[in-house]
Amino acid sequence: MDALTTNIAAPQRARRHQVITEEVKMPPRSKLYCLNPLGLGTVEVESLTSYINRLAWTYRVSSWVLVVQELLPCYNGPYSFGSSPHQLGGFGRTRAMRLNGTGEVAREWAKTLEQLTMRSDLHSLTADPWASGLPHWGFLRSAPAWCPACYQQWQEQGQPLYQPLLWTLQAVTVCLHHRQPLIEQCPFCQKNQSAIGAKTAPGYCTQCAVWLGSKPRSEQSCEEDFLAWQRWTKQVVEELILAHSMFGLLPWHLLPIGINACVEAVGGTRQLGRIAGVPNVLFSTWRKQKRTPSFTYLLKVSYALNLSPLQFVTVEPERLKDTLRARMVYRFPPRVGLPAPASKGDLDSMQVFLQTILEGEVGPLPLRHVAHQLGVGEKFLAGRFPHECAQITAQYQTSRTEQAKQRVMKECDEVQQVMYALHEQGTTPTLASVAARLSNPHIIRRPEAQARWRAIQHTLKNTQE
Image 1: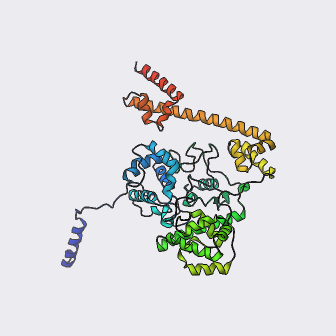
Image 2: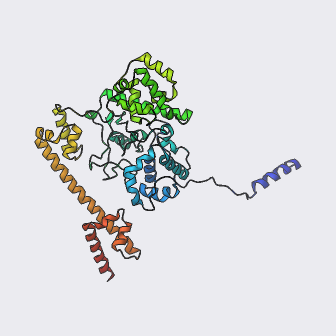
Image 3: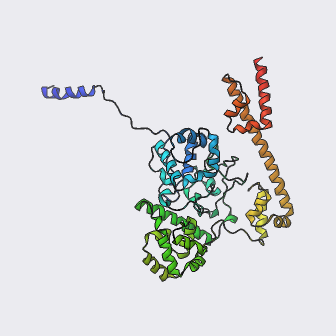
């Protein structure tokens, strides 16, 4: 080996055997799992409450536990719940839908989650980016709604179940994929769902843990004119999301100017009220900036004039007038809400629906809910179908009795598990200590739970002797 080769090889061998002494810096880690939101960047983006529920289920813990132990200690916005997950129950059932809307509450919850997951896009799971400036009334539902056919399809295809932000809007009442109305109450217990669930996985009732999915039903399909209204509503939301992504916050404070231009173009508030199906007195308050129109009313006026809400705040008033005067063609928006029920004369479809309840495909339901879904009174229904109504009533009462028994048995089993756990820890399982560790402290007040407590106390005492 010549000298040149030796001189080159020596440093290479030295570098190969050199001990690395520099400190290796690890990148920062998030406190919570950086779960990817579903539908991000689309009109079917996931809602913030749905993200919280899915994130909790990723850890296989209650959403309440996740919120109380991880989110609330870092949360600096409105509402304080203390340190107990039980104090979150009322908020999860009644006010948690606000997390998906606009304002400080939605922004602070999204900000807190972004800090804990080290994501920067969770604010997009609320309507605040594109609807900030619109009033709260007439915007969000008070409780979650869902499409049973979507849940069933996602489960069969192995896709994650979630609540799109679109389903939280009052104006959206139909699933356009399956052409069926969104459901607001569990078909088994007839209760609304909690936006932040306590124990159940996504897709299951937050009150009775029953699966909420089902196959699509052709008789529940909506009429074409109502579907056209819902398709247009979805396009409006998609347009607003896109406009925010391109231009930032939307100038909703200019709405009175756009509304005033429309009033002048069609010939006054009374004329515009008749066209849009909106009380004409509201246009006066909107024009004078005493109130801001709700999202639902804004959609109705926009649909009637064949405009988009974005045009009210982005198009110059004179140009808006010229556009309306050139068209002079208006359309009346359908009733905002569920599609019209079946007529009283459609007895055949009623018979089919009653039979599906008796066969267990729907329900069990109380008779008043059956009559409400069919759009008739209880007396009318019982008079036309006395035998079926009697069977439905008996079926519902039996179901409720069995459900109550199962709930009491489950609660007693929880008392027993807590007592044995305390005993193994060397702690006397008193009523107070057991109640403090139950998912609901009020369980221990039940006579059945106290009877189980006394029985276990007797068993443990005999074991010690």
